[in-house]
Image (spheres, rainbow, N blue to C red):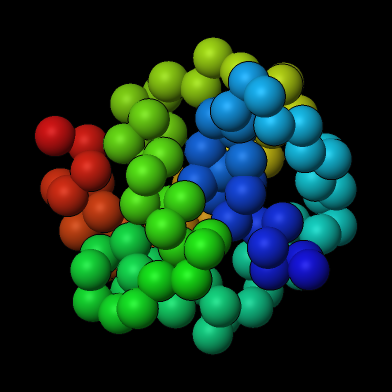
Length: 108
């Protein structure tokens, strides 16, 4: 469950919620737990880069990544925005090669 919560945060990361969908807020503790799950993060990064299969979370990531990278999250709460920034910083620091690929693939 914490893993699911993480990619809701990473992918707009829970931020570009569809207007008709209400999701519970993600706790900072759940986010931290998800960031520490290296296997899960690697799996989602491979999905996002087209290097591996995608689960529903990965599919959402691929859909919303361009919005997040362009800073477009009009429906995000201040807490979600802070969590997204934290998550993106984490990926930049800990997965720099994958981060560079993601930026090239989705930001353009």
